[in-house]
Image (tube, rainbow, N blue to C red; front, side, top):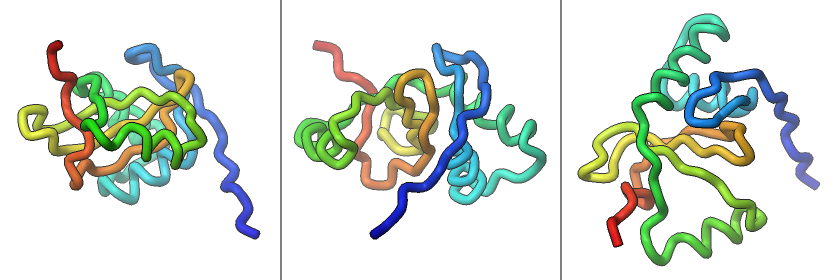
Length: 115
């Protein structure tokens, strides 16, 4: 049986109401974005990304699947990159904690559409 990864919360920001970041997120950020340096430098780099990012939403038809895959926990998504094309990086936060960062290669996320 697979054991859940232990992730520790590290104080962050606050930027956009985010006050914590997980060690899992920092590890994935360094791995996926190629960020190097001390823990403080990596945190500052992620903070700059979050400052430049914009709130994002899942494209229609993707919301239910994403919620089911993540135990129906509500999350906030921030898009860092080319907002017109919806490409770039997604920063995922739950309860004022950044959980992970990943590329938006599939284009699942976009900037909110005015209603």
